[in-house]
Amino acid sequence: MKTTHTLHFRQAGLTLIEILVSMVISLILMAGVLQIFQANKQSFLVQESLARIQENGRTAMRILADDLRMADFWGCRSQSISVTDNLNPGGTGYIDYLANGGISGTNGAGTTPDSITIEGARSDGITVTTAMPTTSAALLLTSGADLEQGDILLVTDCTQGDLVQITNANPATSDTVTHNTGGAVSPGNSTSSLSRIYDTEAMVFQARQTTYSIGTDAASGEPALFRAENGNAAVELVEGIQDMQIQYGELLNAVSGAMRYVDAGTAGLNMNQVQTIRLTLTVRSEATTVAIGGDGRLRRTFSNTISVRNRNP
Image (tube, rainbow, N blue to C red; front, side):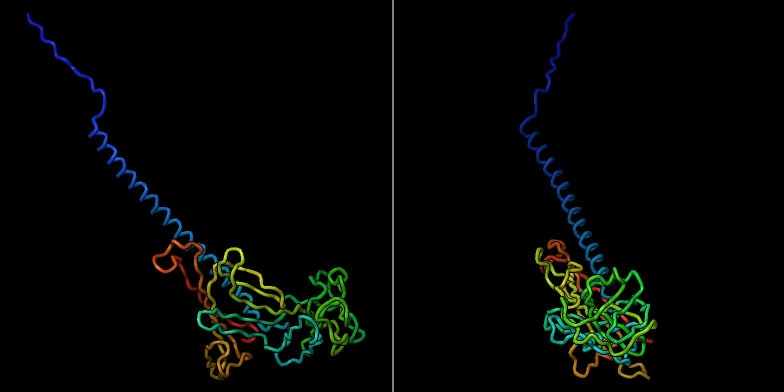
């Protein structure tokens, strides 16, 4: 019987063509993976920038709205009550808290943002516990008052008021406020005598002048919302705030309620009749690769109309 032998050859490797084909397929797959990764990364950057813009815009608007609502607030004093300014007008850093009627601002030319300045008192009043024996006597207050030497105060009994500066070193510890002339504080008091003797019906409020503006962060170079208190250096509050535009709602007719919204500096604008403030903020992203065209930044506008509580029924 004849036997037939069949030879079987084992595969010893890949041909050059097979290697090239597999490399091309691998490169195509890798390119697809990289494209998906890049798209996901870009989507993440866009969503992160949008979230930060939303957070910064809401934070800035909340800070401004809360503060602007309290513009021209002077405790129980109405706008018709006389207030005596006992501060030294020739002293360093003197501020006329009564000059602007509680609200003033600047209208930025061209692309320059607006700014706004408000005067008023802190909302929490401090009760006078003992009647003053003389007009130059110290004010005795309830305990727990968060006061410091150099603070500017309004003392009022709803019929009259006085602006004074604290001259003693530890008013919070002693619950006593002196308002002498001279000393280490600036601008200081021009007189130690108030316009009247105040009794236990009077209250004391911390006076403040606050300016909000748009500036540039010195470290990052990014725009931000800044706040300056009582003539001190401005402090950054919220980053990414590129622009602030403000219009003032002036009451033209108390009977009909007619109003107009105009910029600061508009001819005929009476700031004492401003009852609402229309605020528009433009917030931009820090990232420069999240938008098509321009500088590659995302931007969003936030608007709000704020009622000045002290000037509305």
